[in-house]
Length: 206
Image (cartoon, rainbow, N blue to C red):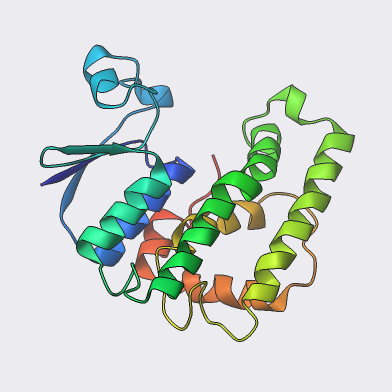
């Protein structure tokens, strides 16, 4: 049976949990990180030298990095669906997964740590306003891409929707101005109809 290490209130663990629900494979989740500790133990560091979550074990294979875990689960257990068979659609899914990590993540995380985790250095009004403006601009790119599409890579959910769907829920629940982005919000509503998104992503921020 697969093992997933990680606390259920981590956005990166949310990605893996939602993906596991979509592919319908059995797994065991082991609490790790923050209040649970574990990640600084020798046994865990032998699995994941970064000391972070999530970590996935599937037989002899051990993986870390949340988007890599989503890609693996989609390819191994959701080939042709979550991992599109068409090379172009799969590349588009990959593109938006990377965009979440390399472009979108920093501003959302900055505001999250100030508003939810009460980190004072993340509460400077000018920096928060700058992050808010940046996020409005970035989300507008996805809004434009979703014009005429139900999901990131076409008419059906793919692995590309999972990381940015988790980021979308977090942004939506932060105290930030939300511009008029109808394609983005319609996509978000479609995600909210999925059982895995309801179970693992639509949680209070903490």
